[in-house]
Image 1 (cartoon, rainbow, N blue to C red):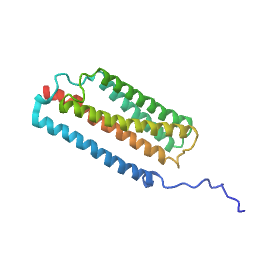
Image 2: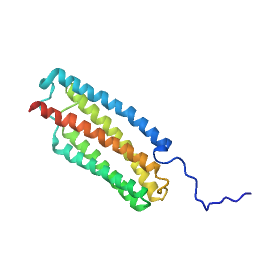
Image 3: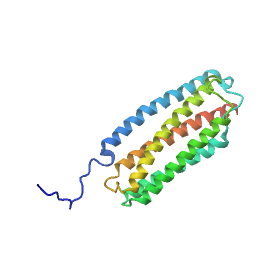
Image 4: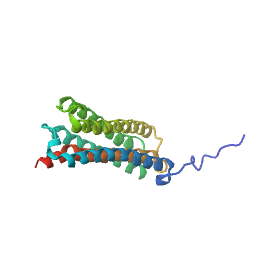
Length: 201
């Protein structure tokens, strides 16, 4: 039996933007992003056609959506920091803590979104505005839940020491998806919460 020389370390697959998973995630983001673009286009098309008459009397509240936006942005900073530390050579608990912090913030966003919907006077049956409001919100929330599961796995694997500076591709790929979720929310927030108020100005 031939002895295995481990002095050189374990083999490492494609890394960074050369990783197959990185390009796979880019493709996924492109296809999922197109879906959001279609829905946002529908919103603006109807808004241009009908103007202020299309808007409901009670617009979606900013009291929870603004704090939720801040929470999601901070979670993005936490993910970025964890990824940066890993690439810089840090590993283990310190990286896991940052990813876990992003996960907790993501779960806080989900909770606040549910609370907001429970108090919302709009329903999916409240005309096309209500339909698009809940369609965009639910679709984003579904992507956020998937992102939270990704972060949970990355936090666990980071804590177990599975990643290092050379084996950082999974963390970078997961972070890329989380950034996508944040950018989508910014577009949804501006569309559903800000533009109706600009129309009333």
